Amino acid sequence: MASPERGDKVIGRWKSERLEREVTLVKWGTIGQPLLLFPTAGGDAEEVERWQMLDVLAPLLDDGLLKVYSCDSVAGKALLAREGSAAHQMWLQNQFHHYVRHEVVPAIRADCKSPELPIWTAGASIGAFHAAAVLCRFPDVFTRALALSGTYDLRRFYDAREFTDHFWVSSPLHFVPTLAGRHLEVLRTRYLHIMSGEGKAEDISESWRLAAVLGAAGIPNRVESWGPDWPHDWITWRKMLPQTLAQWLREGAR
Image (cartoon, rainbow, N blue to C red; front, side):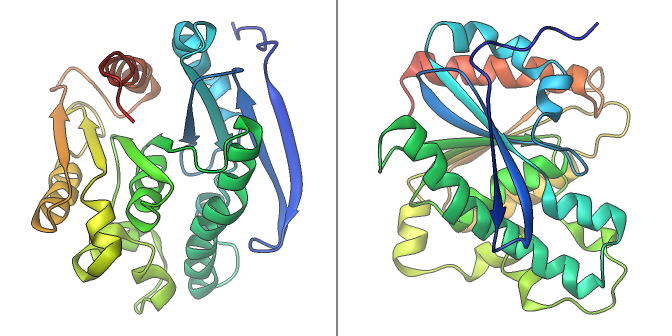
């Protein structure tokens, strides 16, 4: 049975010029550390609520420690639906990240009434890819990422033999080794926590591959395996997410 909607839920919609479509951003909570929680590949902004992620985060929300925001998985939906050409899908993946940086982040900061508030990000499966990607691309606004059961090399999902620059600049496995200067300097002060089970449909080698790329660039990260009892599914993520966020909040992480 689905839980009743929280009274602090707020839904915002607007037409995104970057994505050329209407988009949705949902917020739960009133005060606390802002978290941008990405849905899985085909999910919308309310997917995390339907799968009871807000239920397991309720203690943190109710205590005023956390505010959760979620947006539609525009690029993931387009990829699954084979919207347009492969080149269009790659363009949309890159545009999705810029939409997050230049539309979602300002909306979150306006809601929090703080123009420079650091934001955490998290997601599972393809959502983990986006959580890691936006932190690595925009360390000026994101400070921590929690990546759950992630898939980090998306090339196999495209019906393509050649990949455009839009893909390479939005894929952390591929763009992180090219980073230098101030961008890399700031990113080295950030943190990525990479979690995975090793049960049904999990592939923890994806997590270790991302960690190796980050480590080679001097970017703080940790891989945490929960072992073979935990599958690639919401039952796993409903345990991982609140446990790790609660620990961060207890430690006073920023």
